[in-house]
Image (cartoon, rainbow, N blue to C red):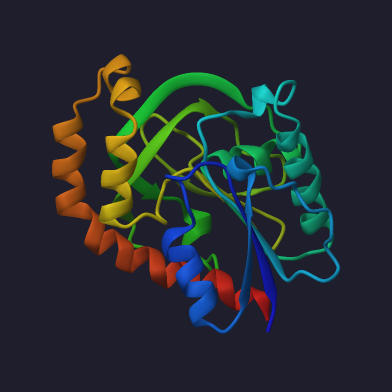
Length: 232
């Protein structure tokens, strides 16, 4: 069995169902809590896979948050070693930047939005079981083009590259598919000022969460199990 590093940036953006499926498969997890002062590890040889979670910071904050650059270096090492990588939201942006894409500020996309599976996703070993269209929680303001040489997997109306695979085992997913309904509620409760500033109705997100979170969680667990299968 393998050890998987999970890098977490904020208390409300934990690995949720991703970690549950990693542990269920018998692998070990080493949680790195950036928000609690943990340092980004640099070991790759003894680790089976890497998961990088979301956060309110962005790729453009590298100058004041040195851990972001360290995370990108670590992700690139895992890609070069052909070991599984999974980046969620900020993690997807960091992965995109690590493999050469430019990440820039753009239109905010906060709430539940329809996600479209693109042709490459239908044959992808991790995403192929997802339906062609499904709702997902999006919560970001930074955007990036498809990295050169990557497979384009998912998109939304506002986010042209909402999911990609680089190489055979590195995945960047902008949507928060790792969250349970309780996690979404907690995130919303701690983000009321941000939501108000963005003109997003809290009641709308909570209503959509009540409708979509449970079925989407089941879809996501199938996907996480497929990613965990890449660990060997």
